[in-house]
Length: 175
Image: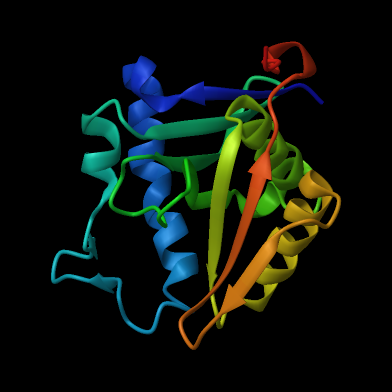
């Protein structure tokens, strides 16, 4: 299984695919979000944050592909985004894998690939009511960090903060 991450802004087909699939993610998320996302009278999810993900170049709307097939996405906020906790470089803001691809290791492999491609201090958060997501991210972040991460929780969300080191050849040595 060949896994690939691709910036959704690089082609019209990728943008269109993300725009069509994003509502599936919001549908899944709406079970846990306390009513933040609502369908309007036209049957469209509101608020719609996707246009801002596709407009700029600060954040990363990444598609997840397996053997050339689009199977999900990861929306990664990068500092100095207002959506990132102070002191963090990256935030996994949204993450989705199509239902038929779940429980095959695709999500974990994709998340680890995103982390590896973007060293620095990371933040991942899950809605407190989404127990499946909490279990998934604890497992993936634990694998990424060898169990060395900070976790906080409140009534709204569970959050993991951790550091991803760059490739060994990229480490700068002090002189």
